[in-house]
Image: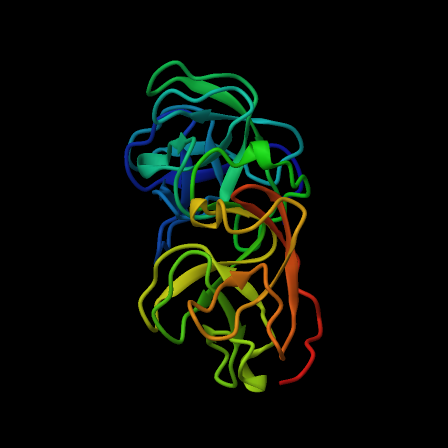
Length: 260
């Protein structure tokens, strides 16, 4: 068991200081091999120095107390939420679970910057501040995020329930078996694909702008696009949250619905 400081691994490829790394699949070395974590991939930590392929390398684990130093993929403003990018770097927009909050700005690619990690980067993620200013890009979200198997093709902003097979299918207020909303889809996915859902938190979608007034409650839609609506359906009413800005919804599904 490792409970403090940096941990030593074997470099599974040439690595540079400040890059996000993951355990190499099928590694059998002692200590285990680590390689770059690319965009959307969870990382165990960041490298503390350059390392040649096969050398040992110190890694600051992602759950370590305090901040980390990470390699920027490009310019990033201080205060921005950063995501994993290819080759172990971080960027201001991306896919997967957010890595952390940028403490200092990056002016160019390959700058090493200070980042405050956000807990839960290996699966679920929780960030408690629903401040709409944190969502600068369209089709983004912060909150409790999980990876699930999609039962059918779906796209950002649609809402899903967990079916009897443990997959996540499109929810609708018009069918009592499909009313227990478990999350909001955070991307475009094909059937049987692994995708991200927001269990609770805040999400931004410019398609909502002009259709949902700030402060209004949002409900599970009856049919249609299997999304949210500011109009309560005639039956199967389930409150899913409220609008906190023109295109931003605080998503907090209620645990009950008025049956159809």
